[in-house]
Length: 145
Image (cartoon, rainbow, N blue to C red; front, side, top):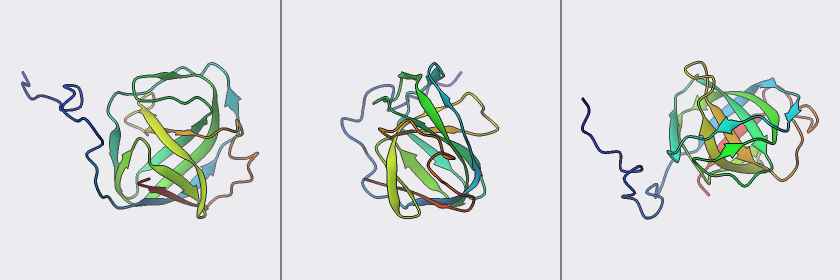
């Protein structure tokens, strides 16, 4: 039995403990199309996830101002990106595509784990990656806000 205490679940942090962190950098390897009104993504409670170089993860837009623990329904698929520079992604981080801001991390969903992590990004426009004109090899940067 594991008696370790999870400091997040125990409410030990009163503010985000990530004072400084490196950018997570990657490139789009898939551009997705499609929007759903009732997706039912269940965001996990932890505010951060580690990603390793060469991992491939999915980015999904939502117009909902969601946070860890919420269920997200209204989504637009962005695409999959391959991590070129790993690190830690934290709720509130800004997401950039080719240096242009495209949203803010609002949480993570484990539906397809261990294959890939769903990384949910708040953006006020309900448009998918294809509609937005995204292309393969577009640079993704996830940076502390």
